[in-house]
Image: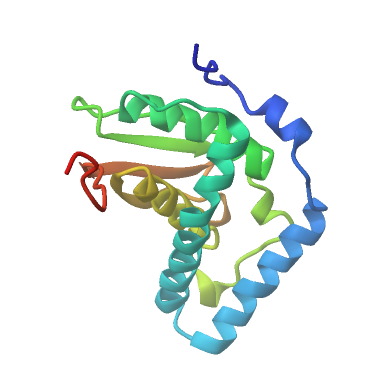
Length: 186
């Protein structure tokens, strides 16, 4: 019998090796600050953070699948729940709420009440277009692409912009069929 899907990432989070959260937060802040200095345009920084996150996500999914014992999700709704309850808990120590499903079940929102990336952060007036946590949208997009789900991730709400929570809208564009490099039966 296949292992049961964990309903929360608490057990995994308790057993995973962790980095000091303040060190993690300050290091991420230094990366964002350096990108702002190097690229100068806020929109370019947003793109770079998303690309960095994407590159992390395509590698992070392997660790997630190896350590979480999650079985194959049957649909996008279950996938979103696993990301929110297990993935975010495993790697960030927080959980997200999945809400705002569309009628087709292909679009939802992941709402983070707490986000360790933004401790000690205040955006200056010159950076109001910056999606400081855009790396998270790239991580989710990259990880989902590696499990055959092409998605579009956008920020709806951001506490650094005065909203009451962080909200990512996740939209499934298409389910990519798995391809195998060769046929076994020939």
